[in-house]
Image (cartoon, rainbow, N blue to C red):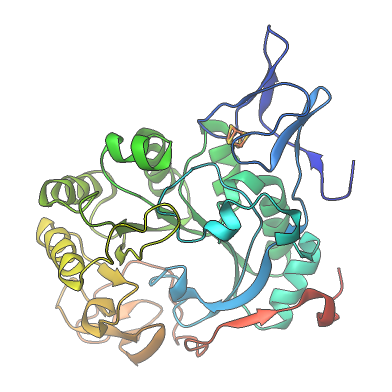
Length: 363
Ligand code: SF4
């Protein structure tokens, strides 16, 4: 077994000799040598293995707002990385060069969990994000890295579609301090036709994180014209969020750009994002943002108590800061939901690619 191939968790043998992967609701059934839909988990002999442990498509320091997380240590830098492959097959994938990769060449960088944590620490990051492709499929690597980060006082952030089974879900989110879950749409038809997955497991993940963990949660929906942006769907999505999660979970509606197998649909108009935001706010959600467009008003944070602006954002750059005492509105004293410190970070909108080989960080 090469060093980047490690035993994979969550599988069992079937009577017909195949083995079933129980990590995500695809439940791939595999014969010896076969790979799952995610490509990076496979059967080797009589066991499942994960083939991308310690391998990454690249490392980068981003603003935490880019994940997007607007209520989790605003203004701080997050050390971001992903691997290859994905357990969904979204026709509109915005990261398809990574997620659909069948080339090991994509995984040019390598780093142990300790190396990642050490580098993030050295660069002054407050957290590490498992992102670019879905960390569910590299659970072993992500959780070992999260453990190494905790030892150094660094937080862990999952950027995920939430397509994961019950038992691994519990283990995975116990290791995370914040998550942005991609709620791709609010119809089973969309999930089935455009992602090859199902809606219900994603809703279960979202409810689980919010109701049963200490992990801070925000949601993102990429609005695709004609596919998931009808008034009816946006009303239903917002009602579900309010009923199941309450008003304080931030929602991000972001703009689609033609990509991968969906190049025949135009970029999402700004008016669609505004309409979605208005619907969710009218339903009673407190914090609703737009993404992938420049809109300072719709990307700033307002106090749900008095309506005053408490965090101004211009793209990923923070402006006016009106929070006191780690999350109280400076205008009225009301508490803003989230993980805040007395002062914002000052990373700004920079994106800093990192070469682990030249870094000299130990691990
Ligand atoms: S994690 Fe990969 S191998 Fe396992 S069920 Fe999902 S797609 Fe299949």
